Image 1 (cartoon, rainbow over the protein chains, first blue to last red):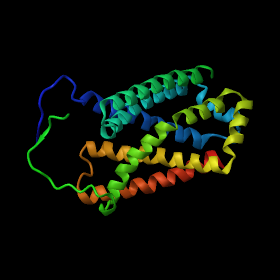
Image 2 (cartoon, each protein chain N blue to C red):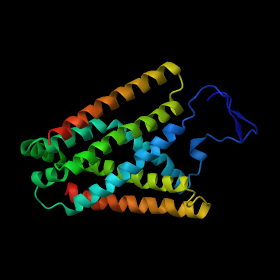
Image 3 (spheres, helix red, strand yellow):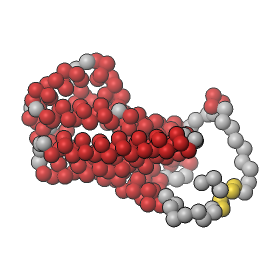
Image 4 (tube, rainbow over the protein chains, first blue to last red):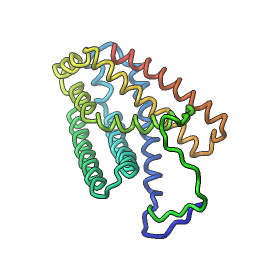
Length: 115
Length: 130
């Protein structure tokens, strides 16, 4: 057992749950996409676009991307906390990661909203 | 947290070449490496996704980029990293539910993860990259 000294309100439980909830959403989406790819005919662009161009898949794909970026935030933050020991470096890496992921979320929305 | 006190001093060996890694441990570090690599290449993947859906011309241009053998190999590698992360992640979710936590089932399930992820990579790769 380890003795924790109480220092604040955050013990990582929320992140632990979010990591698993987003993983579950992405796993379900991956299975849906695998089925859609298996059923895809040899139609090139039109067949590929048809997978994502309906309301259900737009919703699911956007949900996938939001889950992905949130999941990535927790995972990459853990990597920085494990390997980037100087506080300043860690802070810079975390801010850069968060900024990139927020930007990617906007980018993903743009891709899907145009369909 | 810096203030964690561990009661018993445990032996520590961080001499990497002498560490023997059983399969579940290879699976574990690959889970982290695959996540990190996929994160670093997210801009490329988002760009490819955008091009593939933007217009028939952009789709053709993206197709031309991915017809390069080197690009195909990289994409197949990324596909494997994704499938490994996916399968290993499902194994971890089951471990969280206390399924397969004993040594033998845990070793067996790590073999299953490698077999299934490689099979999925080849099947999906054949469908989208050939």
